[in-house]
Length: 232
Ligand SMILES: CC(C)CC(=O)Nc1cccc(-c2cccc(CN)c2)c1
Image: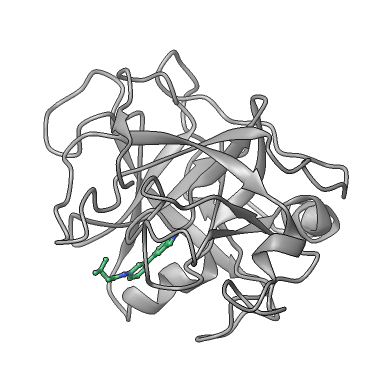
């Protein structure tokens, strides 16, 4: 998160840190007590090492009352997701056990209607991604408020030149922006998850490269089918 602020501890109890060998690689968020929504691209950093999901955390390093490292039962990347392509960049993670819900561990509702968030709407994104373009990694959760940018503006030649489909949405990125390590986290507008941080351009904080987010509305059928079809 560039040019945001440290979150008040445990005020975003749905936030998860996807970890490999104890290292934060991506964001994600609880959509139920056994399921996390994140970005498929996050698996590119995993290889055959064990992925774990940290819930109930504010600090990545300090002991905290309701902090738990959950194991992964099964991974469901969107079937049309693939390396290098920004489309369908979603990942559902089934946890080995149901996490106990408490003041620091809650799930977040996601938008079920396939309807664009109006341009200008203030939304928030949080994560343990880098907080400077020199790659400084925070120990504590950070957040930033970003306004939704119209798809028309986001698709101009200077921006993404038509690459932003109706299944993606953009936010302004002038100085404040999501960045490396924030992928998979939720874009929260009016208390509801409307999008999931996608990598888009690897440039952060430059107004010409707005933040790109996978809209959740268009994927509700897929999400429901995975949650219904999986066992255990
Ligand atoms: C100078 C460094 C910051 C270059 C770099 O490593 N960028 C990088 C790498 C991977 C993902 C991302 C990334 C993720 C989520 C959102 C965004 C942009 N809103 C970028 C950005």
